[in-house]
Amino acid sequence: LIVQPCCRCRCLSVARSTSSSSTSNPSVSLDFHRDASLAVLTLCNAQRRNALTYSMMHQLDAHVKTLHEWSRDKSTQNNARVLILTGYGGSFCAGLDINQDDTNDILKDGREMTQHMSRVTNCIHSIPVVSV
Image (cartoon, rainbow, N blue to C red; front, side, top):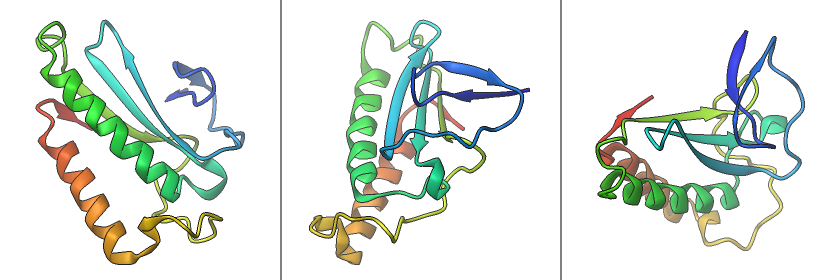
């Protein structure tokens, strides 16, 4: 049995094996479980082995800001314990989706993308909870 986040209903689901089905639009979902003690950040682009699109990078950035607020919120501060970063289906993340259509995004510039993702990963690292 595999316990994995479901991109469609955004809850934890149990499956017998990884499914080849995925959401049609690449996305990043953020869900809170167990009275806000657990946050699950899921990369959903299974057709491309969860390779990040520019849109997903922007979504990831917004979710990380929400996670910082969650970890500092006085009402959940004592409950905020764990962040799970996962990929939908059988892969975590294959890197950058080089076949994406959005060629007008500022992140198309390699330097901008590198700086953006470095800032996002450093922000994830600085969230004061256990990250898996």
